[in-house]
Length: 366
Ligand code: ADP
Image (cartoon, rainbow, N blue to C red; front, side, top):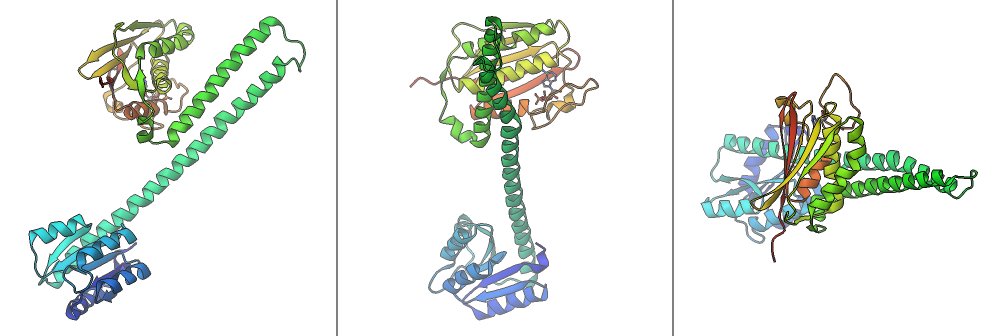
């Protein structure tokens, strides 16, 4: 929307105000509409959807304050300016509360009108742009969700069905040993499908909804399970996974499934970006109202400049030896932690190692 083509509606019971403003606006190339009372004004708001409305506060019949409120219900992106003869602080504050953008005391010069109008139209432009970007973001998120569910879930479900067929003996005899292995594989695939499903659910619901699903949770079994799951991968690189957790760690309000996903992600990174025969130490302590969990690795580290970006979606540090990954891991980690009203921080010593610190609020006694 270009300023010059903006539509402006003037609502004022005094004809000369309508006329003089119209004159200024027409000269500047705007499309102008006028109305002499609130009711007619609102009809024109509905009919012409102006970018901006200039409203007189004191009018017989429906007053300016009410007009402002109704404009906001019709279309909250319309920007309003209030003009009035009795410019008092109170009426200005009152008008601002009712979503007016600014306040123009009578009498005003054409230039004062122009300046305030330009600013108001600039605001309108920003509002429209923000809405557009928000919609685009939602659309991209939807696309991404359907891509993940299609590209990841569908092949896994197919594999699972083959397992069923083989296990049922429909593709020839299966030895006991093979059957045991296939059954274990099938369980892992079930878990993976479940994880994808949960993550998709998570991507669809916003943080506010997850909050209502938080239960008193003991982190120790969740940490142990995560450590256990990563043991085999760690071994391939001769990496030791150490755990320093006090037995009496307080409960936190959490969702064990999502927290496990956080820990697995951090451990996976700690292994992936570690050196041969390195280590990862998981340490949990109580710190004020929080449980703090530190994941310290002896890996390649992250440079100062990159640190602030690693939690962004799809961000990957450029490395000479390429590792696989999506750059999504830490973004998901951060979202899950924030949905727990927690925080995650990172410090790193390039060449020596990295520490990810999570703070999760302790469950309060009722
Ligand atoms: P990726 O799928 O690339 O691992 P992440 O979101 O998990 O995506 O991580 C983002 C980037 O942060 C990675 O590309 C990696 O370079 C860096 N990073 C994450 N964890 C560590 C770590 N423990 N040590 C060094 N670099 C790390």
